[in-house]
Every structure is written in C-alpha cells, then in structure tokens.
Length: 302
Ligand code: NCD
Image (cartoon, rainbow, N blue to C red; front, side, top):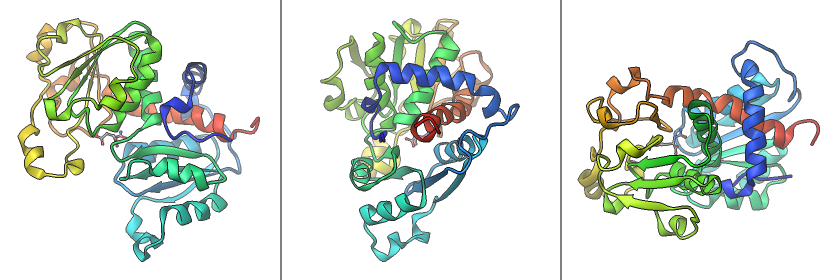
C-alpha cells in the first residue's frame, strides 16, 4: 500500500506510467466508454478546506471507474466540531473506505494521516505544503499541450510562497531537466526548502515582462489570501500581476498558460479566447489523471 503525501512519493517512471495511462483513460473520463474497474471500491473525500475541482474531479474519476464515494466538503457537519482529532477521524474513515483524499489547512496533515491510516492517503492539499495530484494533472497538461516536458522553459508566477501547487510542481519538474523562472513579489518568493533541493537551473524575478518572450509554459497562481497572517501584507501584493492580451504580444506563439484555478483577477478573461489559454482543459485533465492514480492505488491487480 502506498500513500501519496508528496510528489516525491512517486518516482519518474511511476509518473510517466500515470501520464500514459491517463491518456488511455480519456474516453472513459469523457463518458464515451464505460468501465467497472473499481466496482465495489469506496473512495472517501475528506475536505476540511474549500474545493471545487479537486473534490469533484476525484469523485467523477471514481464513479467513471464504477466505484463510489463517501465524504464531506464542510467539516462543520462532522465531529470535527465536537473536537475530534484528525488522527481519530482518519482511523474511522479508513474503516469505511478503500482510499482517502484529504484536504486540510494544516501543512503536514496528510503525513500525519498516512501514519494512522490502513488505506492509502492521497494528499488533496495540505495548507501551503503540497498538492501532488494537481502536479500530476499539470504535467499531463504540459505534455498534451506542448508535446513534451523535458527541457522546457517554465515560468511560475504569483504566490510561490503559500501556493502549494507550485511547490509540488517544481519538485516534479526537477526530474525533467526543465529551466524554471520564479516570478513573484519578494515576500512571496519560492521557499528555500524547495529551491535548496533543485538540481535544475532556476532564477527568481519580480517582473514578468523581462522573461515572458522566452517561456514555453507560464504557470499562473492565485495570491493565497487565506494563508496570510496579516491582511495588510496581502493587500500590499494583491493584484501585483495581471496577464492580459496586451502583455502576451511579446510571448512565443506556442506559449501555453496554465493555472490550477480558481483565478481571481490574475488572468484577464480576454486571454481565455487566445491559443495560449490551457487552464480549462487543464481542469478537465484532473479526471483522467485521478482515474489513473486511483487505478494504480486501489485497482484489482493491487
Ligand atoms: C489550488 C489549491 O487548492 O491549492 N486549487 C486547486 O486545487 N485546483 C489553487 C488555489 O487554491 O489557488
């Protein structure tokens, strides 16, 4: 049994196998073919923080494969409100399901859950920590949109400090010999615990204009308002970046823009119609990729 707490829990070969399998599963993800691969299996989705895409695409993935889901999206309806600890809750839910997707505001919560759970824990985001399954769908999207991952020039823009998606994605891209450009206000720079481990070339910037024309992929993130200890600090950086069609005039014609979503105002809606916008296809890709992951973790051959 394997837990997916961090993207480091998957080696490059396992990642490539999941991406390959995700592609094969596309007709089932789109509802054009039926599957009973996870018939009789139960996925629990325990979400202690808001979510639209992660929870619903996991539930869609599970049901497309013939499995069923239990869970909650609003912890105030559970015994959490009576003071039950996360580890007690996980021990219980592990008895009701074959795998658990956990989203929680505390960094380290998925790791804690993995230590007490007898079924696989899948980290659906732990505070400002990690979001490994988002990374899998980000990698799948890059491969589908650009044709390859290896050697690309990738810019990450916005909240690199509190944004968990960019932490996991940087660690994953390190295995693909990419070149990373981290673009953020100084106070939202990529944490050193991530950059210290990177073997690939990377550089930090405040301005997007100076490097945009060089990029193959631009990964935009939302400023994570809810994680700022001080709202004044948030206000000082809110709206720091806005990707507009004007700005994109300097971009490569093949540039692809990704965003884990939700967006607030960091990408102008005019960009949605351009050939650069890949973020809505990216959101759909959560379904086939999470199907491939579920198959690997709780499929019959296991
Ligand atoms: C992200 C998250 O929750 O970390 N959303 C997602 O899972 N697609 C990004 C965000 O909330 O900004």
